[in-house]
Length: 173
Image 1: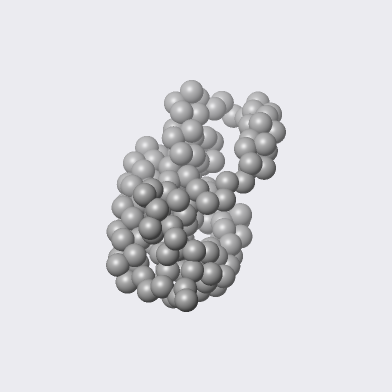
Image 2: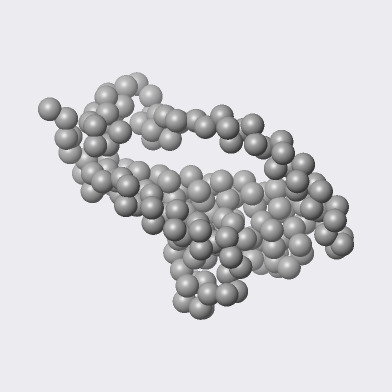
C-alpha cells in the first residue's frame, strides 16, 4: 500500500485515513476460529484444577480487550513508521519475532528484556497478562498498570500516526 502510492488515494477520501488503512484487509478466518478458541478456553478452564473466580474471568475479558488495544497501537505505530521510511517488511518481521518471544513465559528472560517487553513494546502485557489474571497470579495493581499501558500505547501510536502523516511524501508518479 505504501510502496504502491495507494496512501495518496486514501488521504483524499472523505473517511478517516487511519480507519481506512487498518480496515483495509479484514481476515474473516480469524472470526471463524473464534468459536473453537472459546470452546478450548472453556475446556482448559474446567480442567485447570484451580478455581477461576468470576472476578478473575471478568478481568481476563477486559485484559483481552486491552490486548487488542495494544495490538492496534503496535500496528498503527508500524504503519506510521512505514510511512516515514517507505518500507514495510522489516517492521512487521520485528513485530513477528517479538510475538514469537512472547510465546514463552516472561520469567525466562533477563530483567531488562522483561522490562522492554512490558513497558517499551508491551508484548508481555498483551500476551501473558490475561492468562496470569485468569489463573489468579496477577495482582490488581498490575491489572491497573496493564490498562494504563494500553491507554498510553494507544495515545502514543495516534500521535505517532499524526506525526508520520505530516511528514508523508508521495511516491506516486
